[in-house]
Image (cartoon, rainbow, N blue to C red; front, top):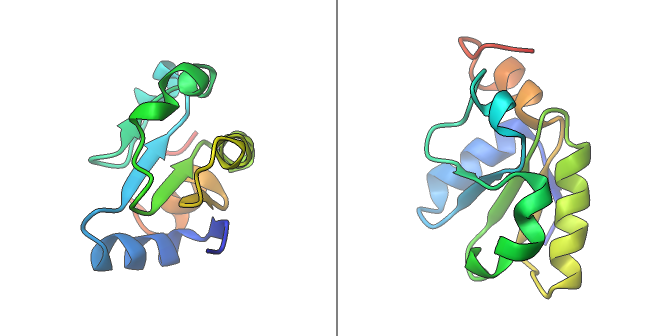
Length: 106
């Protein structure tokens, strides 16, 4: 599976895969600014103790602000045996630009 996906591809994946999960690894303060409806929120620092609760049998699209923290989380999850984790390239910023122009940017 490709380990990175752009925002437009993520929408198609979500629309065609009812089990797909968005995992937002930003901090609570960032989530207060904007969020993808329905996304699961686990701040990056909490992923090590909470990763067992994540799905392994459905696409897991990991996002942050610009895609660097989420890339680190995808790499971490791979070391824990997750083969379904995909980084959202450009993060929620790219989502706001390419998918949801009404979304607040920061």
